[in-house]
Amino acid sequence: MPDPGMTTAPVIDPRYPLLERYLYRFGEVAHLFDYSPHEQDSYAARCEELRTFEGDRRTLSRVLEDYNRSLGAPAESLKGAAALADPRSVVVISAQQPGVLTGPLYTFWKAAAALQLAKAASSLLGPDTPVVCVFWVGAEDHDLAEVAPVDILTPESELARCVYDPGPGHPARTSVGFLPAGGAALAVVDEVDSLLSGAQFRPDVTRVLRETALRSQNLGDWFGRLMLFLFGRHGLVLANPLLPGLRALLGPVFRRMLAESAAVAAAFAGGREKVKALGLEPQVRKDPAAANLYLYRGTERVPLYREGPGRFRAGPEAGAEVLDERELLEEAARRPERFSPDVVLRPVAQDALFPVLAQVAGPGETSYFALYRDLYHHFGRRMPIIYPRPAVTIIEPAVARHLRWCGLEPAAALEPGRLEEAKAAYLEEQDPVGIEALFGRLSDGVREAYLGEQGVAAVLKKVDPALEGLAERSLGRVLREMDRLRRKTWQRHRRRCREALRRFGAIEASLRPRGDYQERVLNIFSFLARYGPGLAGQLSALPLVPPDASVDPGHRFVRL
Image 1: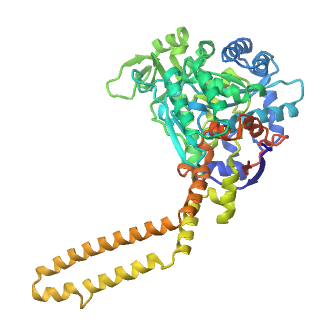
Image 2: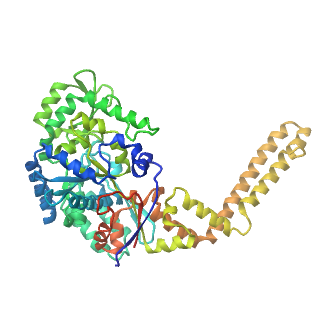
């Protein structure tokens, strides 16, 4: 297929007001971050700071080289993992939970942007500074409801959902990286295969999905194999925090997090107050007693809470086991794999492992990082450059035709409620009788006939006061029948406008699926099934990140 074209337009997601300031008015939120992504000098300054990075690069490199090789990584990824041993190397990183079939499109765009940012940063910093692109597979996460659904756009432009079911026997807080691939994964592939029936490249895509599922033990590994299929030849290196080798490196970090839990909570609370002072609601809410760490019991993550000086409660439930801090510190030294950071401390743990130059972050993550500056400083570090993930929407040819037909620009179609307004305006324009006005007049007339000064209720009241109530109940029945007739009339009118409504439905399913942005719902593989696996390379080559690593805040519209 021809290379896709791309345009940009300003689109603001109202759910993330802090991101709007970060993109367009950075000065208002600059005090919440250590570096500006809008200033080229930030990269050299951050690189200079990372010269003091004290992590165990050799062990990190070896662990990740072995892990990526176990997933069938190509030479480019293995070369990146090996480069981590170089004391001059720095990292551009992005992170996401291992959604089934890689989850929504934002995972694809995040990895693509991180690779491009790494290339741009390499040009800025010069050949003496290797820049490695790492993708953190958030396999510790235990929110199955978030990773299990796969939303597919069928060849008929209909939205369909498949849901991964791991089967019985898994505790509620099981890390998704411990959940099985196997038959549960193949059941999803079979359902997707059926939904994509008729798509030209369906056999090629489902073959990849099936082969990777068969070779994977768990969701984390299946996700990793698919990400390497999409990005391995570009040098993406995967890091799974459940790897025992990475856990061993984090032991001292976990011990400090436990010992300084109250100070960590205070630093986080201070970050929340700074965001509140801007008139914004902090994106992360936490119990003030939360230790921001989990303790593993088998495959289940149990949250820890401070229970007075030197004591922690294992679980939110009243009467949960209370553990001594000294015991936990000893356990973190002996078995660091039993500990896991939460959303607050995960970036700190990540940056203890990697010399992070920049992090590609989505809208929510950018808002999270606005709370974390004091946390980083508490641990004697500075926050890396937070580079906002580009927002992207794919416009398929049929959708482009439908947009031209209804006179909507793509950016307008993304505005909440705009498609519904356009659809309602079209139906009203095509209404030959003025349905709402007609029934409005009829309703007013009936109400007047029943309840007016000379209406039925007033007249019958003279006969017997009890008849007034009967008249009002009679009015209710008449109005209900009128409303039923009104709905039937609209139903027949919509039937007359079926083709137009089908076009509106196709636009909505593609651009505003489930009332959200495309990148937050639809899965990349439904597009690859229609346009071919080669589309992944074409999309990842689009200029998402400017060559000078600057920030283009516009929403990208990619026309196929």
